[in-house]
Image 1 (cartoon, protein in one colour):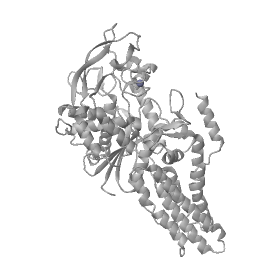
Image 2: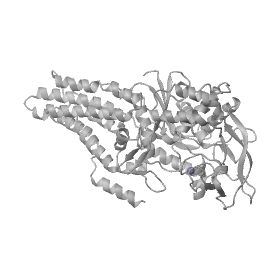
Image 3: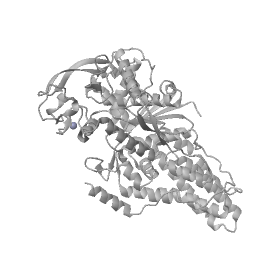
Image 4: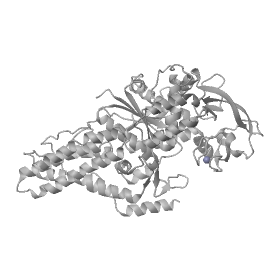
Amino acid sequence: MSDRHILTAVAWPYANGPRHIGHVSGFGVPSDVFSRYHRMAGDRVLMVSGTDEHGTPITVAADAEGVSPREIADRNNRLIVGDLQALGLSYDLFTRTTTANHAQVSQEIFLGLLKNGYVFPQTTLGAISPSTGRTLPDRYIEGTCPICGYDGARGDQCDNCGNQLDPTDLINPVSRINGETPRFVESEHYFLDLPAFTRALGDWLATRKSWRPNVLNFSRNLLEDLKPRSYTRDIDWGVPVPLDGWRDRPDKRIYVWFDAVVGYLSASIEWARRSGDPEAWRQWWQTPDSDAYYFMGKDNIVFHAEIWPAQLLGYDGEGDRGGSPGSLGRLNLPTEVVSSEFLTMEGRKFSSSRQVVIYVRDFLARYDPDALRYFVAVAGPESQDTDFTWAEFLRRNNDELVAGWGNLVNRTVSMAAKNVGAVPTPGERTDADRALLEATSSAFGPIGDLLARNRQKAAATEAMRVVGEANKYLSDQAPWKLKEDPARRDTVLHTALQAISDCNALLTPFLPHSAQKVHELLGGTGVWSPTPEIREVTDLDDGSPYPVITGDYDAAQAVWASRRLQAGTPLSPPTPVFRKLDDSVVEEELRRLEGEE
Ligand SMILES: [Zn+2]
């Protein structure tokens, strides 16, 4: 194992409902492919995330159901944990933002920023109810969005255009409780002094050469007009503000986005505390040769290329006001913000409210996780908006996974099992044999390079091109015609099986579930590509129970290199690796989509 440490920081799914396949295409699958590749290459990966559980939408859902925000968060956390585990996403820790550990770390970052002068108090206008005189939290104020004109915008954000708002921005604000017009009175909040980071953020972005060009350009443009942003909000659900006179106030909390991004750090610390070495997180956050890759959809770039780096720079004391690192010590900035574009569905935007949606759970009830993972890898929204169509999904599954890769495995293993009962012993190889083995074994370098740079679509396409070469070799050599020449037949079968073993390793980051099956069909035993597990734990500080995703990934045998197949390894007749889908699937799914509108 190398000493290279790689932090895979995966966007935190918001716990107001189950996730749909558009979500997991943007952050989930790409971050897992990346992590699995680096583990195979011998790097020390820490992949963390969790559910983002604070903020207005969860309190609105809780109000609507007449339950506590915690109940909503508990229910959706469990749903999301189940879905992400079923997709095979190999988190070292997938936790949540309602842990006591997360609150402590979020408060520590706030205090470090305060100490260095990067958050400051400022009086703004807050809403109260004229009839009761009580504070009206942001979510209870509704009005017309000043940016897009949507008439259901709330006091903290517009769900239509996604912009962050203040209640005073709304046109015609009204109380959702009784329809009265709120009165605005002076209210104290803390603000993050973003303009103080314009130079430091610019210097940092200037060193970021490998980012996708659209992400880098977007991030640079953000620097042109940085304004202070409120670090606290009028809300009763979130991380308390750790100051005397604020800590116990029920109506002031840290803004959900400013605590959610701290989750990458708090989850790393929680992972270390659970590992038995509470300081272990430092290897990913504080050593100069560690790298941190952040995965998300493009709607979240601003929080990962501007807000979170500014919080880190301020905590480290590296903005215009200077300062010194807080008690955790200096923290590393992101190496790369890996942002995906959007996935649409049959030409339309995913929308839970308009039912243009397929949830991960429903998808996995009908199809295998690797079928979705493959589609995302080879045809997902890596660098441009991309449409998911059922016809394309069916074609990719049937033509590429089943007929291309699965059939190569099945034909070859079944011939070897029937004729030899084991991996055959090869005789002297011909030029064609050597050419195939050269093609498969030399593919690790270039495909690994693509994966390290998050060019996953090109990597998957290249791996499937190598599979195509193996298929062509098998057709050309036609071992089924070599009954009279068993020595040559065995050499061909051995060559094809060795090529399959190489292709299986190349495809393992994309297709971990089927890679394990192929490993076993080739006579392998034990864990090839590990499956994450759901573990029930209790909060390290307050004892409340919750599920996490974690796993033992070090024991896996998969490595990023050609491994020699041992002649004589027993083989059994294979079962199919992938399921062929019937053409009627397309019509059924389209009917389901229409029926739900
Ligand atoms: Zn709007």
